[in-house]
Amino acid sequence: MSAARGVAVISGGAAGIGLAIAERLAADGFPVAILTRTEGAAEQAAASIEQSGGIARGYSADVSDRGQVDDALAKIRADLGPLSVLVANAAVAPQQPFLEMTLEQWNQTLSINLTGTFNLVQAGLPDLIEAGKGRVILISSSSAQRGAPRMAHYAASKGGQLALTKALAVEFARTGVTVNTVVPSSIDTPSVEKKRAAGTIPSAEDMAKYIPVGRMGRGEDIAGAVAYLASDESSYVTGQTISVNGGSFIG
Image (cartoon, rainbow, N blue to C red; front, side, top):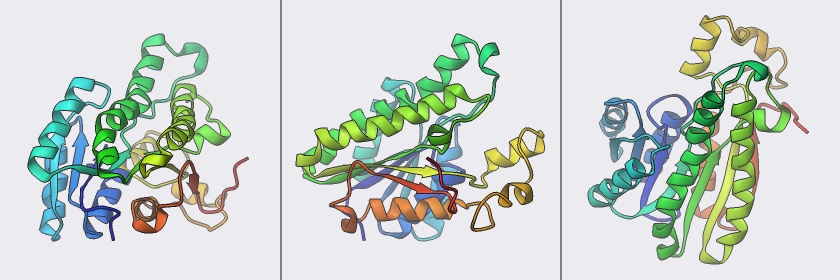
């Protein structure tokens, strides 16, 4: 059951890993607020969750724009109540060779993946501190741990999340708020399927050959780890990185 009866906010929660997280937290009893920059997508995802018996609302917001984040959180508080869990999942994962990467491409990736995380967490954290408990959960990537060719901007942004987790966990430990990161690897999502169709990544079968458990991950695998970190049982867990990768040991 939830660490508090407050709202769980999931950025990038309308599809893939984010949607799986939203569905799981709603099933666990959280009122869920889904943020996405695609007009109408969050509302559609929330409607699907409500049809399954959960409480959910969708809000359009670009996490790289602080004003939009502030406005969305104000609406969430008015609609559903104070925040309890912040899941920073919104991200882009473009591919460009490093020597051909433009400053604009670099900045755009960091503005969504890392500054977007900053915006959501800083804007929502006061609710958690006031309550004396709460959960901040960042969704990083194994690219930050092992590197990723043609994705230097993505790997750097995700590595920044790992460092941010450590800093915030220490700074806010005495408030009752925990801060942790889940690190997915080889998760089958709609965005991965698009890259597979474009021929930029191998087939699921080929990728599974290099994963010890013998399959690619699912959004539900990540959602399970998030659900634990959002629960009462994780109150003594903070500043940690939980890798959900099918046994792919990354050093």
